[in-house]
Length: 254
Ligand code: FPP
Image (cartoon, rainbow, N blue to C red; front, side):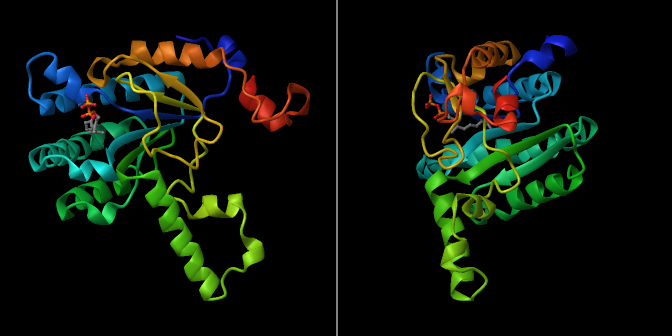
């Protein structure tokens, strides 16, 4: 683990986002049902959350259920919802104890009442958490999020709350589900595929990407440390040259 001294020299990593892929293949390769891969995936979530707390990472965003995942076989959708329900209920107290604030992004109106209620209760119970903001992307799609944001802006434009001259990227950010989150510094995708799959499309414009063949149920704190080490070797310039970086950007870079 990093000491306070060498932590200071590390590139700031405030926000880590993860596409947790490979549960189904992990299960299939062991002759198990897909859902058993998802069940083991919950242990990986716990392990990664613990490592984030240890490493002082302030924001962790997990792609837990995409807007496209509704199209999976109904049994698998139901099982995933059950796992989620169990997770947010059972982890509530532990989150409170560890200073974890739960947040959800996505079109939650599509979730069942029981899942929504459990989420709302845990979000309320953990709202004072100051160590780590754990964001679950549920019924989430980046394009859908942008369209929902545009609809809110268009409504305000029509009612005179906004004028065309107000429109700029910073304003749009304020209408996204992630309005209170910094952009992700690092996006990890497990399971061997090398794509973004509609996750945090707007927010990941300058995010560093890390792809690993490790399937999500085999991902843990040790694998996360490998990704963090890789991130530390990156040179982030945000489209500029080194000499142009502002102190704020330099702080993110070094
Ligand atoms: C992708 O693997 C994973 C998902 C669609 C669901 C992720 C869910 C969990 C890890 C468990 C529940 C989460 C929480 C936060 C409690 P895949 O099924 O697409 O795998 P494959 O590509 O091998 O088929």
